[in-house]
Length: 405
View 1: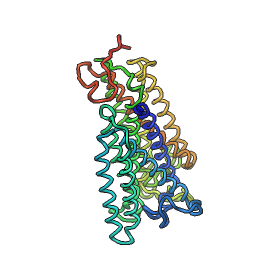
View 2: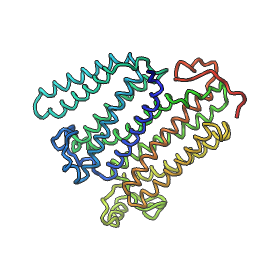
View 3: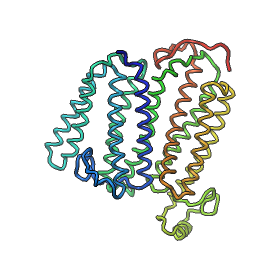
View 4: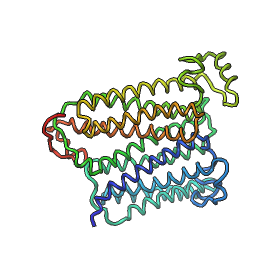
């Protein structure tokens, strides 16, 4: 039985599950329940998968524990995706990695009771990897760079799991005036978006749509590609600023919009900040840095939306509004405008958890779709003589479309 045709649906499932995981992480951060389960890799001393149900429904445990279980499920999907995309050549390295993780887990178990949870967790991961390596079939690797991208996802999912755990274990440890929990949480949030984009790219490159997309040798549009790169860079910067705000608890550092404490640019001298904190009533106190961070996020949002709308118009005019790039650019613009609206609603609704989570999902979607547009644009403008059609990306053909939109 030929299972190659099922690679794309499985890659798409893995990407969608990862988007759900990003949303779940945003929900946990928005509700401030990241430490609802204070230990890791155990949960209140129990094996993560054996936590009694009566422990789930108090103090945000449900959200945080569901996030952990969801992350474990995504990890399993990524391991299977790596095995499937890599074909038979992936079996031996997966077996080696799994064996090393089992050995490391056993060594941790021998260090003492305090290492019991970590050792059992690592050994169980190694067992899953070993099982994936033993799956028969799936002999032919995917084309082009897909196996390498899957291995990147395999590495990232384990790094993400480690960062999420360290964010709990080292929550109160200080580096200067910042806790390690905050730093690990920030990296964990940003890397999660990157991880989702990577899996989205794997799904795109393994799709029948990508295989049917022709290469337009020498099609003009290099300036549009540069415009897309600039826009996606601004989106990435926005996501970093947004993650910094969430983990600095600066999402509501300014309570009004479009003004900021009644001004277009708020004063941040000590007297003004003290006055702001007096009128915040039950809200937590804020610092000048948190206020400035949110203002940078607001300016970045305007810059990103303007860049996206501008380059989308240029892409539509160059390639045609009915082309894949033109339609994708219109969707990208719509998501950007929706994302800007969600940012405003986050403030106006006092950072309602569902609105803030939708804002996180919108940011991840913007980053992925922008990346997909760049890959598509580069393909459509790739010179026919570059020799990259079949060696660098799967499903590429040398078919040229007559005429230029």
